[in-house]
Length: 327
Image (cartoon, rainbow, N blue to C red; front, side, top):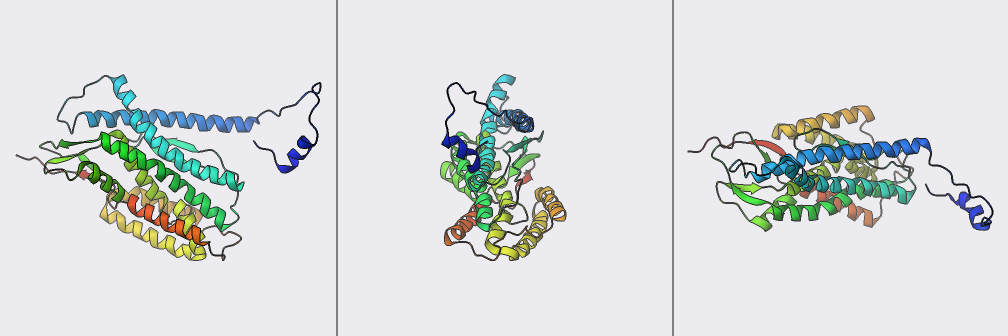
């Protein structure tokens, strides 16, 4: 914990005598408990993502079922770190982007809470920080809101490049029933084409776990940039449009409902978004300078956020891929 200006005035005016005892305030017990929970959740998320990463690596190593797994359980768990370290780096950069922006403006916020989950594809529900006081100005709100997506995106790019270079093009099996097909965001598709070109018929890109982590990181960035309510995109939208951002929120939710007819993989996210709006309302909490427009630099950064959303978004995140049995 830092000193406030009133705390430091006496410290600078008189140094303690060598014979004088120096008293150090202990770390509050509540603060120690909070740090303990952050650490426990992080270690649990490391565990769940390593387990899922081991499954990803095992799937990668068998080339769509064309070869048998070659390796022991410790071998696959060790290689699960490819996915675990990559996705935690992306999610951690995102949340610490928010956290350090809060610290810059003196806004009280917690360290990131990582969310472990025994989900077969991700092993985590992401991460979040709690901001424990109102944000006074649109400038602060904008900077805190956009810092996370930019930080996560910057980390996701090298993860994507390395992960794509470690991937390989493999022949599809005769029967692809039950395989999952990942929708490709524009940036993901561009990097895949630059590295591997267009696979021949009957072949597909077999993603290394690190490339899958990048895919998930890009999707998470797009989800956070939806201009809805208390999401990062909602904060950015309010800072740019003020009260008119409520109309943007409602229009975006309507678009999300429409996306559920394009891909069923949007159903869960749409339901969670609607529940969030019911709980907190569609109107963003006001700042003291609601009617003051943002400066030109931040308006340009808002355009950058829109571009990040476009290149990270895919209308069909996960679909069941089935060509049936080929003769």
